[in-house]
Length: 356
Image 1 (tube, rainbow, N blue to C red):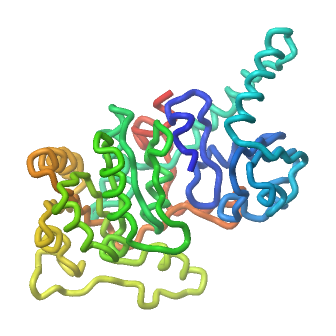
Image 2 (image 1 turned 180 degrees about the vertical axis):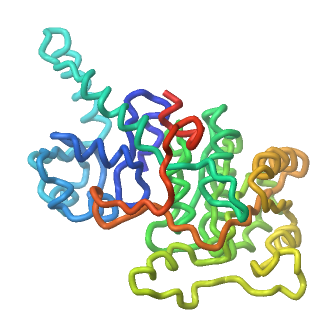
C-alpha cells in the first residue's frame, strides 16, 4: 500500500520484499541487513515466509497505530504505538539533530551495496516470443508510461497482478491500487471507474488477467454511460494462471483452463471469449494484440480513442498459455522460472535500476 511513497526512481528505493510481489534485489537487500524498521505495515506471511528465515540476524522495530498489530506475527525487538506520520516526523527530527552534532553514521557504503544488487539482480523482460510473454507487456508499459511519472495502476489479484508488481514502476503515493487481497476477483473494472470519478485528472491504467476481467466485465457499461475514460490492459493467457501455477506442486492442471473453440470468433484462435466483441457490445472500445511489436502502438492508439470517445478502452494482449512467475516459500529461496537478465540494457531495458 505504501508503494510510490518513495518513487521508484529515487536512489534510496532499493526494492520490494516478499514471496510474490517482490524484486530479487529487494529480498537480497533485506537478507543482508541487520536492522528493519516497519512503519504502519503488517508482517503478513506472503511478505515474510517463515519468520525464522525472515528475522534471523536482524533486529526489528515496528510502528503502528493499532496496538494489536505489534507482535501479531512475530515480536519485534521494540514496538511503538503511534500514528505513522507523527513517528516519521520525530524520527527525521532526531536524525537531523544527530547529523548536526556528528552522531549520525555515514551509510553511503551500505547504500552502494544495495544499489549494486539493484543493478545486477534483474529479471529479464525483453522477450520477442510469439505468443507473447507477459514480461514484455510490462516492459512496453514502462516505456510508454514512465515518462510522465503520473500513471495510477489498478489491479486485483492473480498471476497478472503479481507479475505487474514485479515489473511496473510507481512514482507517487496511492498510484498502485490493489483492490482486494486473497478474495474478490473482478474488482479491477469498478475500482478503476471509482478512481476516475474520485480524481478525473488522474491517468488510470488497469491490469487484468482474462478471468478477473470476465468476472465483472459488465461494469464497463457504467464507464460508457458516465463517460469515464481509462485504459485497461488485458493480458489473456486463457487460464486461471495463479491457480494453475499453484497446482504444479500437486502435479495437477485441472479445470483451470478457459480456452475453447469459439464458433462465432475463429479469429481468437482457440482462446475462447471474444473480449473485443463483448467490450464493444458494452459501449466501449477494444484492440487486440498478438505480436510484441504491436503492444506499444496499441497502447498509444488506446489513449487516442479514450480522448476521442471518452469511454474505457481495452487493449487485449494474447499471451502464451503457460508462464510461471517468480515466487517461492521463503525470501531466500525464490524460484526463478524464466532466464534472468545478463545485461541490463539488453535484457531489462526499463528496469528500475536504470532510472535512478
